[in-house]
Amino acid sequence: MEKFRSLKVWQKSHYLVLEVYKVTRDYPDFEKFGLVSQMRRSSVSVVANIVEGSKKVSIKDRKHFHVIADASLEELKYYFILSYNLKYIDSEVGKKLMECAREVGRMLSGLTKSLSK
Image 1 (cartoon, rainbow, N blue to C red):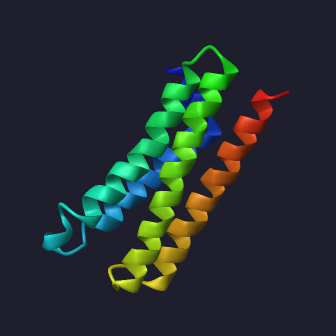
Image 2: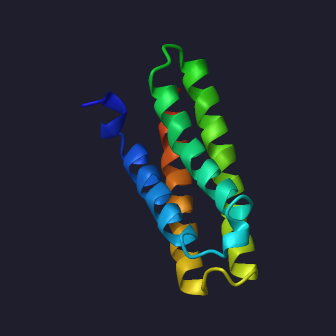
Image 3: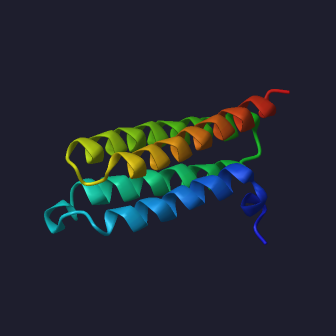
């Protein structure tokens, strides 16, 4: 098994990607190449940067990929707000997605801080 799969932050962020894909299936067809594409891309970017960072040798490089992952996560949070405002998701779904994203952010921050020890 790949080393990154044992990371709790990878597991949680992978779950978030799956939820984003599930939720965006119900978005309007005209959003397929707009908001849906952006949401899926940013959610996958979080996980992909965690994975890539896990293979870097230097702490500086690992942290760099964590920063990129965190930036993509913030982008995704905005898309949750926009989706709610456009009434593509209800408040319950929006809160669930946002809390999951916040948890990933906390975990990512913790992982990054642990590299400095």
